[in-house]
Image 1 (cartoon, rainbow, N blue to C red):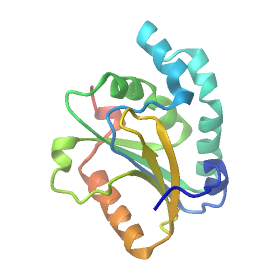
Image 2: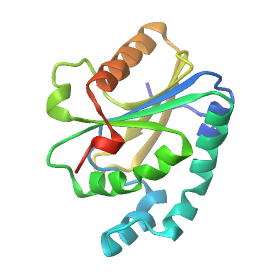
Image 3: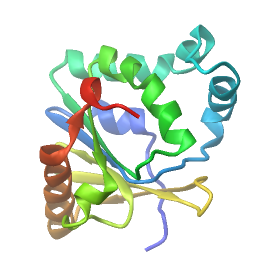
Length: 174
């Protein structure tokens, strides 16, 4: 099914009351909005104050949602050794955690026996999925909403399977 007109994520999360879980399964994302941050990290090896400010809208969104009781969890399935992009993600994840997200990492080998969907997703309140589609080089190819109960169950079970096996961010080294 081709991507449809999907509301901005901030709008979807504003309607969320209990939980927002995110499963990421790519080793490289080539999202245009992160290009400057990634280049700066490659050059300097650290997440800079400028990078923090570029992420401010996301961090504020997380804090607002968590502040009203939404539990936000993110699980990342990654190949080992990790890609340069995943090292960059790992370097900045402490900001997500400080904002209130719970983040875990799972080596891809440890996910081999899990049934996983073919795309990254957000599952909101266990009732709505927002799939993220990407091109081969990691550029965004749009989003798609799904409310099918069978697909929601597949995604919820996949996320929980990854979450149970994954290592909390604070203990995961790259």
